[in-house]
Structures are given as C-alpha cells and as structure tokens.
Image (cartoon, rainbow, N blue to C red; front, side, top):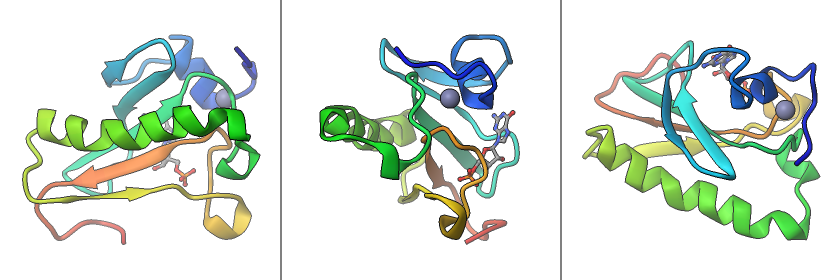
Length: 115
Ligand code: 5GP
Ligand code: ZN
C-alpha cells in the first residue's frame, strides 16, 4: 500500500500521530476533524496515499464507493439523525489543504462554522 512519510494523514493512518478514531478497517480510517465546522465532523480517508480525488484511478472505484457508503452508517452511529453534508475538496481551486484524499462528513444542528 502506498505511503508518503511526509504526509500528515499517512502518519495518522500509521498511528504515528494520534487522532480520535471512529472507524477503522483494512482500507479505510475515519477520525474526528481537529477543527470541526459542525457539531459532528469526521474525515473518511483511504489508508493508501492517494493525494487528491483527481489522482484516483478506475481501480479505486470500489474504495471510493466504500467511503461514500460508510458515511450514513457512521452518522447514524454518531447520533446524527437529521441529515449531513459530504464534501471532498480537490486541488488548489477546490480549497484542499491536506494532500491525502479525504471526505468530510458533517452533521448535527446548525448553524455551522463553515459552509
Ligand atoms: P481540506 O481543506 O484539505 O479539505 O481539509 C483538511 C482538514 O483536515 C481540515 O478540516 C483540518 O481541520 C483537518 N486537519 C488538519 N490537520 C489535522 C490533524 O492533525 N488532525 C485532524 N484530526 N484533522 C486535521
Ligand atoms: Zn498520505
């Protein structure tokens, strides 16, 4: 599995930097965002280092599908019952800050800090 030693989220996936984990399996890790925009704000990441959604290959389609499919189950588990938002920022114009693919999943009562 590809790993970038200088990547923040690869370090979180490897357990080198602590994070508040909510789900982990062979391919995916989910943890709470350190600077939440909403009452519940988690990040779903592949363990493999894929820098952006634009770098995903057709072979990653199943992985991307699993990231999306996990979102409603996690929100239910975290007590979000009135809807949520899923966001993937891609590249400079997409406002991406951490270059390891991640999906924001945000829920809970409004108002939210961002968006
Ligand atoms: P982006 O702007 O790249 O879509 O989002 C990056 C997200 O990663 C931001 O919401 C930011 O708060 C979060 N983040 C940055 N560094 C850390 C960290 O060390 N730990 C955790 N849990 N989240 C982080
Ligand atoms: Zn990475």
